[in-house]
Length: 101
Image (cartoon, rainbow, N blue to C red):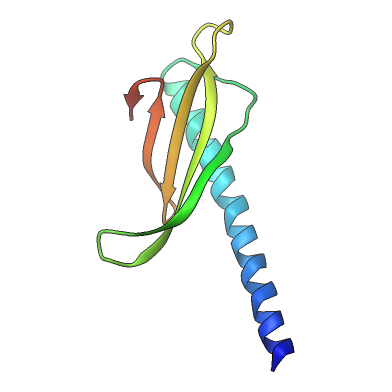
């Protein structure tokens, strides 16, 4: 019985890890797209996980919410903070240095 529980935990962690990788790649694509649309440059070509937690969606279902931080530049010589929040496989909010999109 203990081995079944251990296997279930390992499978659960593997699924969470895989989902986290997909979410990070999705966040990165969305940030690149937003920066391109705003004629800005995504710096370091990366996003960093700032927060992960459970929340309820509009229908009351428990979902994972992930918040990532990134930096962008207007002219290549400056750095501004940005933030993207994902919930249930979609962008909940995207913030580019003072403007939410």
